[in-house]
Length: 276
Image (cartoon, rainbow, N blue to C red; front, side, top):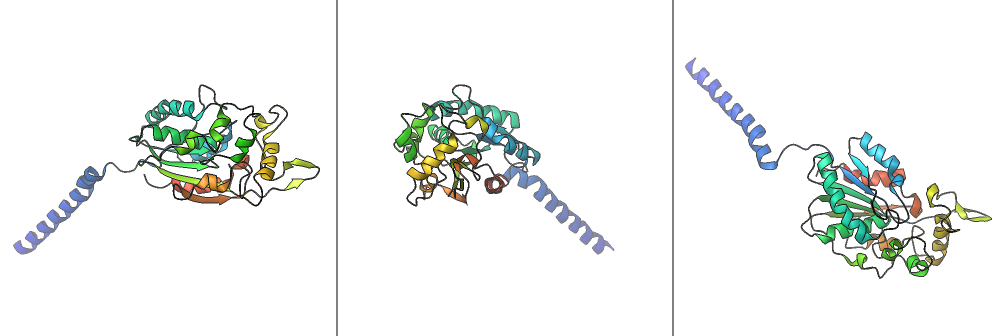
């Protein structure tokens, strides 16, 4: 009986020690258990505003991913990447405080990706952003901006879209993973309305820009960037992806102003749901 009692006692001690080790020491070594997916900031692009993210913001929050679409207090729609990068310093800090997290993710469309890249490059020790996902971002500029920037009403933002723009040359932040989504737009037009594409709806506030609209701009872009070079109508695929610099999450077939569909959302979601 004494032997049996001794064996049982030893087993209890070993089991207790195992429970103590697994539940007490490991959290101390590896930090607290995950608090769920990281919060995500949504940054709009050139000639745009936070309204483009309204559906995504609602869907992400419904999934338990805290999401917030950025509005820049200065020149929101047509401000420079430098101005927006400066504002992001406080925007990110406030968002971290509001969500009580040390890190966040950023999803950016078009020029918003350049704004975020410059923000991250300005302080190389910045480790606040785990992932930057850039959708249709002209990381090497767009020849279309080279051609039309003098007549473009959205100044000075358009200068950051030039192929020679300094923001294209900034270094990556080693603490952040960079991802891209590009598009090879397959336009379908209804003659004689050659500037209207049934596959390319545009937000209402993008119409009537000094007699132009973004669909017309993308139509012209398709012609001028054409010659078989894949693009989303405004930004060539090779400008978005810049092989060797970024991780591609894949491509879609939507035009530049319509890269907010389920295709892009699901590609982005796979990153946002990953553990930190």
